[in-house]
Image 1: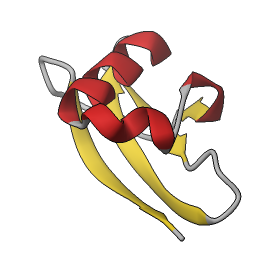
Image 2: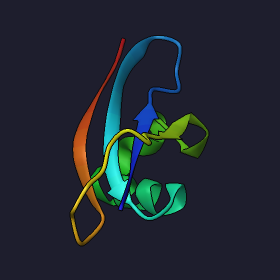
Image 3: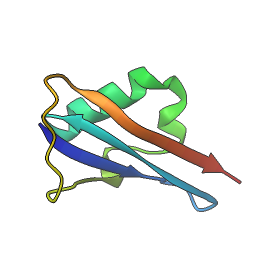
Length: 70
């Protein structure tokens, strides 16, 4: 699976979420199922594939999810 990193989309806050999935869209769907308020923090436009990371997981999943808003 690929690894995607979502960054904070607002001006006053930060954090990131790292998700293993087959595509950006699948990663975002997994992330929003993990936390329904995620649309306030990030979106697909704030997502990059982390090419340096490899994962041997067999299903899509959230690896890290830490956002904050000021």
